[in-house]
Image 1 (cartoon, rainbow, N blue to C red):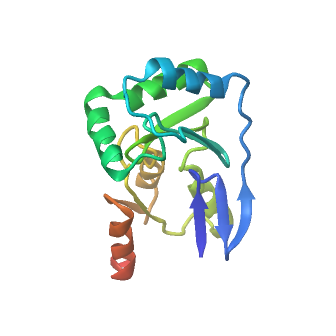
Image 2: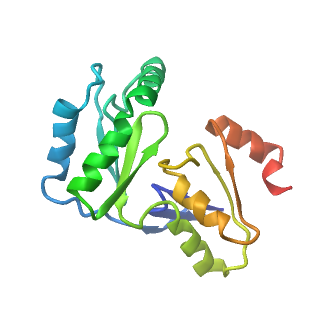
Image 3: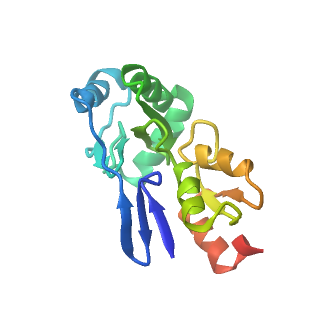
Length: 183
């Protein structure tokens, strides 16, 4: 089994890490995220754990990763109206053009070096297995601006490859459990 994590910046095969990209965080970057959190965000209830530096990327959430399910849902509804996460993307990519950012899940923004989005997984699969291997991808943000969109777009250009939109990991599990992915 092969698993790609952190927008494709970490790759596991047979329960071993094959590669893990590191991220060079520019001076002032974290401080600029903290400044947005303090001065730029209009969201009032912040719960903590706002900035996670992960392998090859940063995940940023103004509501905070510690938010309850109800608070996450409230933020998601508010963000649909306010478009705060799109504002965060514009803020980051204007200050740091070497980065790209996308909306992830319901509360956060994923930030990574330009070109190190989920579409990089296709290159790794082709490198390991050739260009004629079918790829099936399941994601919850296969929409313009979503963190799954670059991979979905790339798969649209390839023969025998496809992607599916889901609303939750439970839907993904159901697709696997009932072999719906492979028919």
